Length: 232
Image 1 (cartoon, rainbow, N blue to C red):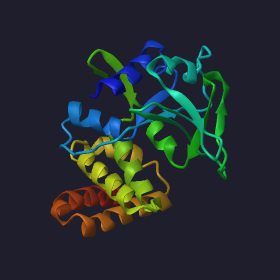
Image 2: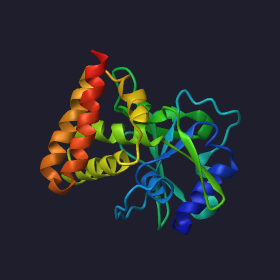
Image 3: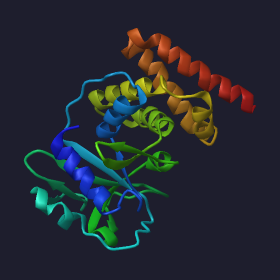
Image 4: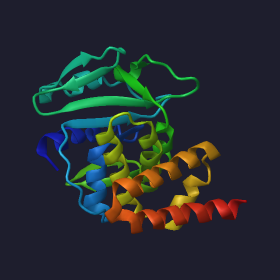
């Protein structure tokens, strides 16, 4: 892991924020799947660190995320929706929360952390039973791989940019290779029919985009179809 990224994650660990409901998501989470779970290598280059915050936030103490990252040279700025992000010449840190109800186009204030986070649909999925890995002495909370996989397939149908859609699908497929049937079933069985249809549509699209991965796609499609059949 890049040293600047490791320093960010260590500060979160030192402040016990993983235990308070912060989870590392996005490409750096996928990197840890590659490193510790045997997920096949997938080249990526990103300066973004995405942190998901469980809401309502129930941290036991108030910690300013703006202040604790200042020693690493991070500054804070605002997006048009009012959300706060941190940046330095090497990295950008964004804060996300699950979008609930009818949704909103405005940032969500988390006063205990002195930030305003971006609400996004379906992030509740990856809050389901997160796991902890230890990387070079730093404990890091990440989504369980089954949640990561199904979430990526679901949101890929909402992507407007093709490159992001492709990345979502590829990462989901690579993670699916290391999953056990019961891990998929435990989460997939809780999804509404509409979500399941979107996931299957993503797999259909993936067959056209990744012909070399068709065996893997067919295997996952077969598993999901069988799970649906056993529930009817």
